[in-house]
Image 1 (cartoon, rainbow, N blue to C red):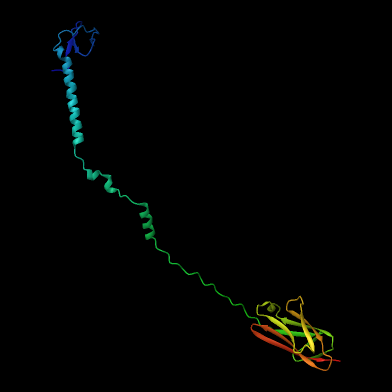
Image 2 (image 1 turned 60 degrees about the horizontal axis):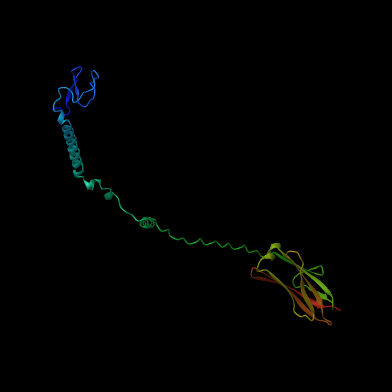
Length: 223
């Protein structure tokens, strides 16, 4: 039995679906319930039954869909996720990195300066060249210039270099160092102080590289 009854057209006497209001063949409007209809009174009931059947199938499909067991263990993404603490990752990275061994700073190499010895000392008194051990005379109140030249020239800049002038008796003569303004050249003024026959020693000492060089001259009183 069909869900929707057919009706017969009153004009062309053909059957067509009861849901139509006109005949699809001749276009005549349907009058009333049509001609030769079968169970037209139950049309609405059959429609309701069809809707209910469709609803039952829909509900049954929904129940099957939601009641089908699912492998929760296979689809649970939580099994593959591990909560980590960022601080733990940083500590782990630090623990994996080798701790560098502190290296002591390199010991600077101490370069000892080359020691240079004095090659020559020359002394002049009043423009006259003198050797160690020579003698010369001076009058009371007379001033004599003493000049000492040391070579090599740069040696006088060393920290341990020193030169001194000394009189063994200031009553015979005095000696006072004076600046010369020339590298490697040193000067002094010798002044006679004796009033009678006497003598004293002029001593010139040069210290270089912890070595002491002594230069002496005998100075006599001259009338």
